Length: 152
Image 1 (cartoon, rainbow, N blue to C red):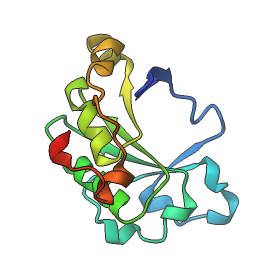
Image 2: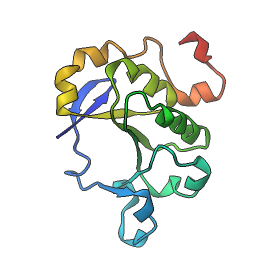
Image 3: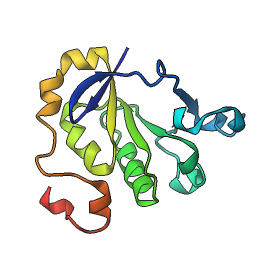
């Protein structure tokens, strides 16, 4: 079972039980007409270029980016680039994210983090809540220059 970490705390992942579908990027172009965009999420590798994703923004409600290791920060860069290019849908980090990285996920534009039960036991909800940035973080405002990253 997956746990979703948001600023409000831990939640059970209900994406698939609510009818949502995760599709690998390689398979995403197939059978597009049969999928409902509001129920479709794309799993993209963390080494893909943002330019190769153009045209997918409107056709998926969520993009999920993997973190194969907590030391692999390519997903942070990719999330920031997606937001800069105009992706306004749900953005989820999945995998080896630790509580200490939660604030940075939010600054980069992620809406949520998906962790497994084992991580949730090792780093309970209060540790994640303690890492919520104290200032309002809006990637849209950051991108428009209303707030400097240096102030965070």
